[in-house]
Length: 343
Image (cartoon, rainbow, N blue to C red; front, top):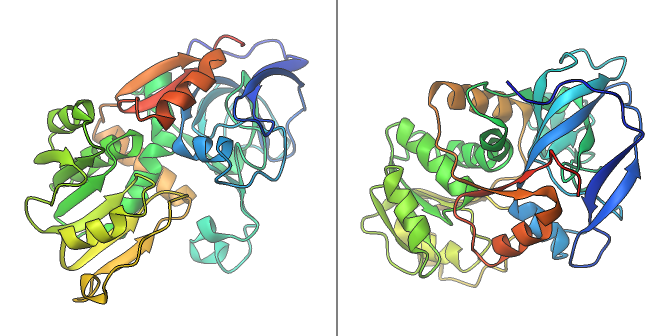
């Protein structure tokens, strides 16, 4: 049960905002009542995602400034719009990267709303969860398993969801799965894969013995540096490190018919490689965003197969420190902001 319940409605809220400079700054912002389909949340926690780092570092163009980042939002409903009937006042909910879509284009009507041309994203097009309060679209929120506390639940909302979608893209026949970049997404998808009876091989940046040790504790068959060859041919490679050079490396690690899944929203350029590396029906594919079906499916899996969420917690005021440590590769597991105290 969350310690946060309904309270007097604030006129303002506090947040850490991105204004185009490299560092976030603490700001006071006016509260705007929720729109017809929206919820107003008292934010408990918000995960710190590599996508937030890409926004702050300028890798992802920001259409609105200033913007409050954050899209792994765990909060309690304080108010709701006239059409927002899916959640009750006082209920704990999660809001992820996908904020809204048009709901009627060919992508939305065929279960591929993650590709909607009019998709909007929390923390990019609208203020996100690096704040004490946030407005979110109720239609794209998800109920959270009660067995996870507020800190543990936050990484499920992007790291977990993107990892889950990447694992599904690898195919059910992929029994030996390599995970390249063993951070927030990697350590969660490893557990999902192992729960499904797959073998996991974890590849980390050079010298990251903490991540390698975490992988082995979670049940990986092997853990080593990403420059090392796979100890045996893999059926699939899931790439979460934003390093384009890992694509041809992973192609060399997978068996004929295998798939390389690029799970990040941004990646450095992929270097040229010989066609023979792709031959024998190897596949390279990307993962773009997520769907509500991903969210409900993954939360059901998380409820019946409890995951260990390795987290490091930071105060909301310390969001810059969390981003800097993520940038430098000094986070083991996932970073989470405690938004209970205003910056």
